[in-house]
Length: 108
Image (cartoon, rainbow, N blue to C red; front, side, top):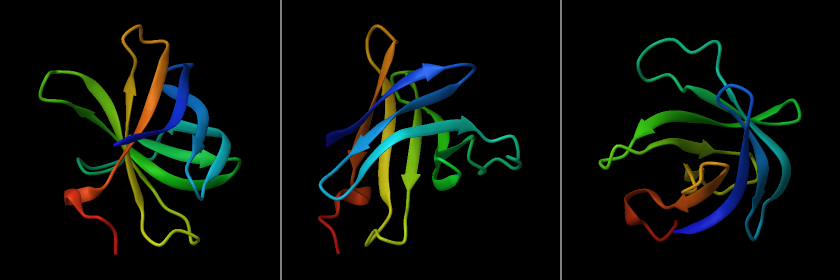
């Protein structure tokens, strides 16, 4: 796992920050509550850069009772979607976006 982004909470359950990987350098990324969400599997948030939606996020709770967002980021330039989790730091003022590979796969 690797940290690919740093975010700050702004407003009510909204986040802003940057994402950086070897192929992605995204500034001013916003994670905003999804007002259109319906159904139990609907995402709780949308991930935006400007007016472009680049992903979705789901509110989750870890086995230890820690709240976080599970993100799925996608773009036509990606070989496959990027999965990551947004966790708060111990003080709660910054949030780290931690990349993970689903099912432990090494890539296709």
